[in-house]
Length: 402
Image 1 (cartoon, rainbow, N blue to C red):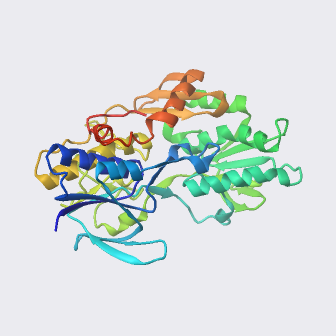
Image 2: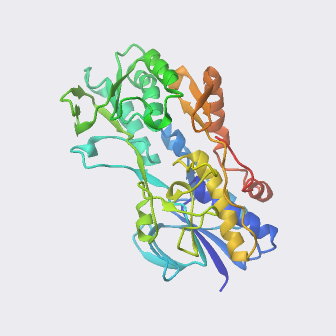
Image 3: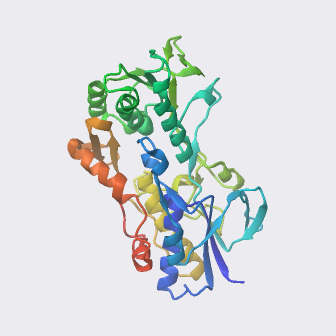
């Protein structure tokens, strides 16, 4: 039997892992079928999760079938359900629930993250922009609001969570609501954040720009507040304040895909697997982790990867290269991504772009928005389906900062 590199997940990290592995196999003259690169995922498509706060959410995907076929990657349609590191095997089910088990020589976990859903009464009434189908449901809901009688509740959106996703979602909402309800509609958008400042994970650097954008967009904030209950007509805050809202969007954090629980290894508070600089899971000789399921060092200064597209793309290239290098017995290229940036969309107001872990502002307003548009519409999309171009783009030394 040929050797097999098995990758679970076809997101940013999974796609680039597959292409990165094939690139090295091609360079080493092993793209002859002696080593198979296979990807298990529900669909052969890349969901553009960083754009799900935008309108037209159902269109935020890109096909991967042709890219994988031309590169020599086998695609397996299914949902991974179990991993056995003792047997070097993965079980997966198809759309009808039939279970199949496949063996691997080396495994790459690229299963991404899922929305954090705490035990809050009525959370099921909230919408979210975590997955493509969820964002599409929210969009349909917003488009149907115009059918409801005029009321404060109908015209109000509460965004739960003032982090990266919450800010981007809230900044788009006044425009999206007016597009649905009429340009003169008296809309209200309120961000509820447990911490005492907006964008707590972003630090003080970009905060003045975010606050200015919110003020000019008319987005309100409730800081140092938590939501204790949600119902179809609004939310109740810990302070006792009631906000009537027909639309509540939950954006309060992410956790690594729970399949990581099946790997007996050290994890961080978000369920991410500790990996070495080559992205091999510590304590497992045949298992690599990448993207949102990897807790990886970005440099020698103590910085660690974020659950972000920016890190997932480069983690994927590195994981693919290094898992193939491990199998072939050639030198790996340790993952390193010393430059860190953020580009936060602020809706029609513009955007803010920062550099460094201290997030020093470099661009804001319309100029930053032009950069954000390029990132969202060009840089994060899959490469050309032409084999040579796709494999060249998977070079682990090609660091994309976006």
